[in-house]
Length: 146
Image (cartoon, rainbow, N blue to C red; front, side, top):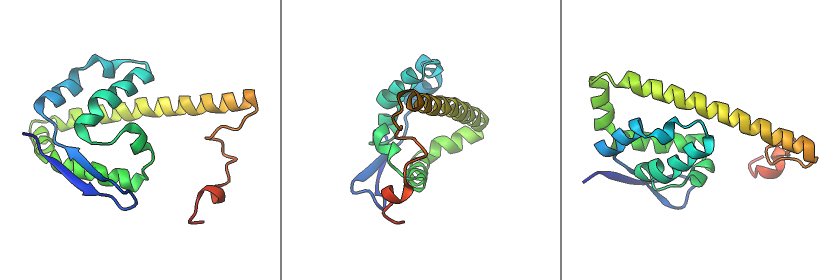
């Protein structure tokens, strides 16, 4: 039976559980054709429906609302629960492959984020309606700490 670790994050009212990946989960991550798709919506749908539930009991929407420091804490708990996998992959030389996959995902995600931002800005210019991503948003209005 796979392990899980439940913890609380400061500023988040619910407990979060991260899960240990099984060999089947890991093999599927490396071989599933959905992750090789060029369509960002296909990739995100796959991540949301297949990958994320195997890793943590949070949705993509939940994760989008966390601060980077909270995401880092979640990642650290995930790494701890999956420490045997990460240690073994390093011993087998798979850490280079994992680094390559991470770099590829960062590049792919970065391209899609930039494309999405560009699209939102163009739509804002065309419609004359400020996007929620617009730099004209007053930071002081949305930040209670200011």
